[in-house]
Length: 192
Image 1 (spheres, rainbow, N blue to C red):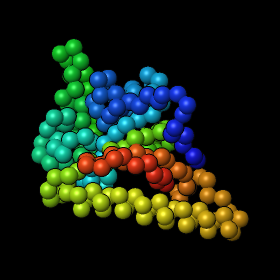
Image 2: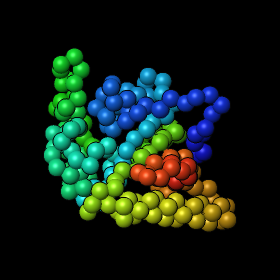
Image 3: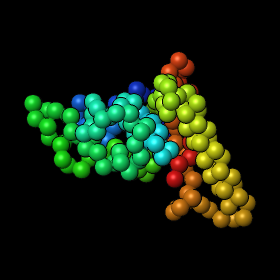
């Protein structure tokens, strides 16, 4: 499926899902943002300790979750179990605390919002687990997955098979990758 990204009219993207409306970069915030009529989503990604792409803005967990310390020190499962609605306030209350809202994986977000234009900012730039080399590994992994899926789709088409549903289905998503110190670039990325 081709996802229309550019339009003749200005597009409205729910920044971090609508971070004034719900706990930023969570499925809950993305649901709220899309329900307000946004044309697409904007989100941020990091790599977890086990190499899974997760959706979170900060390098550390302290500001938005019940956890603390560097995000990159936790596995995707550990991040999913944190309370990502813990610090969100509305009118002096904490309406999203204890509601089972965790740090989502990029895969979960893309599957849930299939066909929604999405701006993805690849975070990083520090030392160690959040280094430029690690960020480059994320970009390379995305490119390799895209190439593998494109090859499978071409092979299926050559043999008269269509891969349009289920595991291995090929779809295209336009992504803007904003890197620190570089201009954003638009590229196509297939995702399952």
